[in-house]
Image (tube, rainbow, N blue to C red; front, side, top):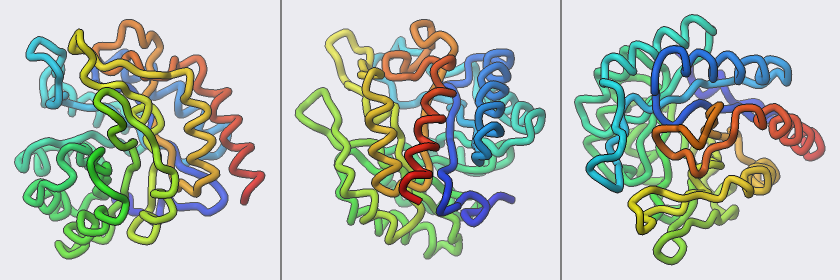
Length: 266
């Protein structure tokens, strides 16, 4: 079972990357294979990410998934094929037990970071629990979320920064929060979700992918232990979060730049 210690390296960041949602086996394999090639080239630890279910949707007709068990089985199969750990987000207490049979890390969505029963149920699986900081929460408040995991007997907990609400339809990252939260647990910067522009008039989340490199570099400089990036071969056709995802063919050059930034400050 993977633990925090397997991921943390003061000289390198680890990478969580993949599509927003699992759309199918071939697509998942294509994305994972390419990311793994890049991670291996730069000797980075890599966790493949894909949501088995999208529960937080702006509209009732938005894509929610291809089927829970079908998507989870794809995550498990892809992880084994490419020998990489996997992660997915969970939304209900019963998801903890189900998803933990398929993936290595359970992710708590930002809007659910304060849901005690959900966090505790994830902790009790023994898996790493990655809690996304609520867009409405201060960095200091995340200490309580972390304590819910450790007080449940699980020390494998991480925090993901993903921006704060700025106005009504925008997010901004306060990079001061990264060193603050590192006092509680390893910290990941979710680059692409930090660039979302939620609740647009059409009911489809917008984004600013042209800022991905800027935000990612700032995260490395601020001391983030890991970088989280959603990527897709054709973001314009992605079934979820296409507006803020990084095209897969641009990932390598970004990682190369981030590795150089990390090397310059290590």
